[in-house]
Length: 357
Image (tube, rainbow, N blue to C red; front, top):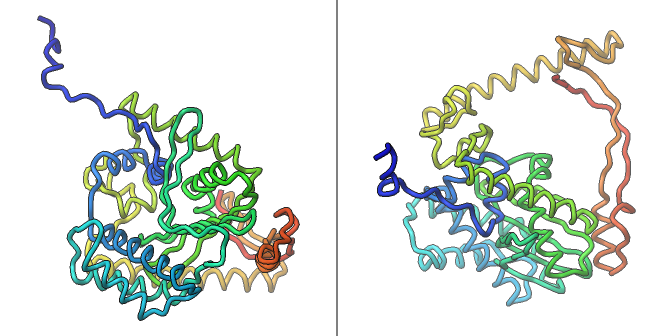
């Protein structure tokens, strides 16, 4: 009998590639395929994720309350009362420590003071599932809040993670645009989409992404591209790790094959956090001082920039293309919205940059 002839008695079958790709898996696979697989097959609950889940449930209750009572703003005390009901009677019971319950209350209070609800929209939907099919592949997602006014759609996705990405980072993610693809399939008359991630750990921070209907075909291709890579990884049983800022929240960071010294530093306890924060303060002050010194020297010597080891440090002229959101929102409210390009203006400027190779 040949070696391995009885493997079928003990070898576990390889996990199958997902028949349906969620927006969460789509976004995770763009960052680290190994982490995305672990999160899909063995979702690891944690205190931060539990608090985030409860916040989402509370936010949905508050948003529904606003619509039922025709309120653009829900007073913080009313939002906290509703949050208490959710904490004590959750849809999905689970462990929630006292400090995490208080963390949820803090997030709800700050968010309620910041949030305004577009209750006069043509469509106002809370926790709405969106599903679309592309080339036989199902893509799904659940949107925290969706409103439609005329041909304009706004989608809000709440994030309770500690890392707050830049606008540029969010623009490169596929999770938000995948919601636009699904909304366009469900409401074909839509022409413009304002998609926003709102980070609620501190005072809410909004990260917006604008999409037009003309962008939808390219977004569909990108979603199929990501699905293809997910399918190939499962077929080959090869899931490559990719270190990045998401390592801090990775469900398998202690078994990651990438050496710890090659990963972004993950804070493990309060003492570690204090040490890293202290180093950050010192390094930030040093960078600010060095930047100010170089700027002052270049200005005094009338030198535009320095080239150091192939990198450019100095001044450069810029032209920034900026969306006039006020004019766009005003025209949308009046039902007179034009093509999105009509609302962009160009502004000239000058900035000091450190451009590495």
